[in-house]
Amino acid sequence: MSRCDSIIPSGRAPSQRLGHPEPSNHPHCHPERSNAESRDLASDVARFPFAARSLDAACPEEPEWARDDKVNHRSSTVNPAAFTLIELLVVIAVIALLMAILIPALQRARKQARAVVCRSNLRQWAMTLAAYTQDYEGRLPSDTHGWVALWLLRGTFIGAMDPNANHGALHGFHTRAIALCPMAARPRPPDPNRGGFNITVMTPTMLWRITGENGTSTAAWQILTPEPRFLGSYGYNTALFTGFRTEARGNYEIRDLNTFTLREHASIPVLLDSIDPWPNLRLADSTRPNNWSEGGDRLNAFVMKRHARETNAMFLDWSVRSVGLKEIWTLKWASDFDRANPWTKAGGVQPDDWPYWLRDCKDY
Image (tube, rainbow, N blue to C red; front, side, top):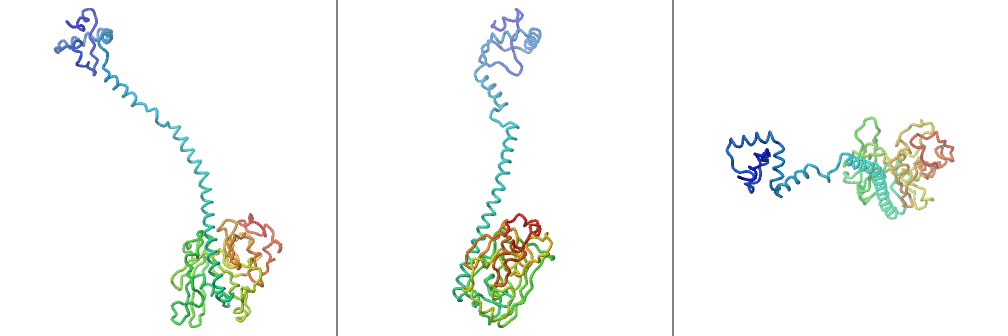
């Protein structure tokens, strides 16, 4: 008789836990039994549950491999290294806070970088036009309306299709790479309500019609015909191409202009950010309502918040600097331009005279 069988007469039942048979290396605890004996054993266990617990204590300990399996099972159900929901929400909140702080700073840095590129373009224009005036003894191409300067902006002679035209008479350089400010590098979407231009230019042999569309503070102007299409973001001082007057008196005066003889070169603008390649230099109407928008006709074509409260400009001394938006009315645009006009402090402008989007700009 085995040790486990000797327990039954004394009221103790052998242990046989369902689903967990004892290892086969302990045959003395669980000898082979018939089906009848197994049923009797099960009934004894049901009547004497304390006997099973006692037998467990009497039987050999559970093998080490079985204990390891139980430990691994318990450790797999709870991962102490996992994130809780609160920890995950805290991390997301911190990331969102950092993005809210950094994104505006990155946007300002991006705009400043574009303004630097814009000024770099104007410096290249300065070197180009300085070389041009040196070659032509201080003279720029001229006509009655100043439209001839468009040939300098475009860098391609408008009458290039004319076989009798002198293609090198007014230029000798390419300008497409420096014609666009990065803040306005694409044309605006088609809008029939916005203005465009349609002019006729006379060459020695032919008449040429130029058509195009004005831009905005964030869109380039474009010349549609003659082809190829050309985009630009800058406008020039037309007085430098019309005898340095807002309204030229005669062709002789126009052709005789020598930029070397002009005074205050550092105050004479040549090229600026603009929605129009050749803005009219007449002053904005002083009775205009105070809600006029950015960029407009006349001198207002240069007034826009493309670079916040300033715009970029190149002057006749070939320097490049930022110009305050209200400072534009104080520059020396022409010999007959009133620099103490009604839109300056000397002319008596009042804060309420300005549109709302210009009132926080510096006064001049």
